[in-house]
Image (cartoon, rainbow, N blue to C red; front, side, top):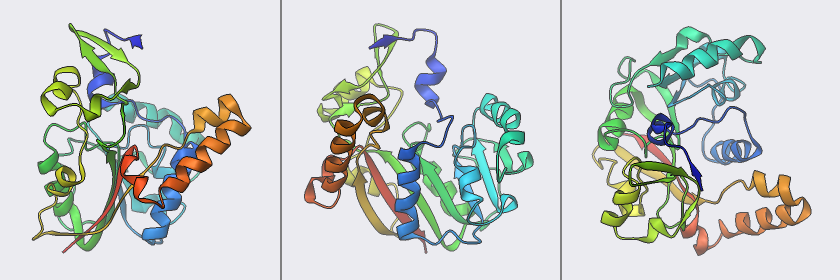
Length: 255
């Protein structure tokens, strides 16, 4: 584990991806199997430096894609990168706002996307309600968020006031009071916990499975053997053992 005493912002907000990895591409492929993104108005909630936004723009247009994030530094980094991006989303479409108070009109989007964001917000229930507000009736909310079935806590821990970054084994399987003692900065969810965030009067959950990591690092480090590991774990997504995946993959439809 790596001590990162000064980087509490990283601990609480998470560190957004700076490149569109093969693991991200796999998630995009999974989304495309569930939803048609063509010509849709899309919000990337918690968009960080905007690596997903330019990907979504390939299916619609840059003007139809929006981003939101609570961190002004992430928007500044996006503005520095925008001239080098294909399908760059206009900077004015990137709003600085909390997930619980989105700076958009009611019934504005066809799709809202949230990739490993819900676990970081102050009020996850309120965040889901806000998404419902800004979605058009019949619109879709796509969520990836940590699954408590995965045996590693991937956001690090706090011990005696020091933040340690790394994958912590078995912490997600501990009782919640132990989990919160070491990881007060983040959440993970059982199936029931995450589904209870969606008011049944406002949402239909039309898809809910679990996904394993992309294993990009294993492939880079171990080559062929990393690819075998990747292939075997991704096969498990088609079995009941998907329960142990790293993240929930949820598609919810606004009523």
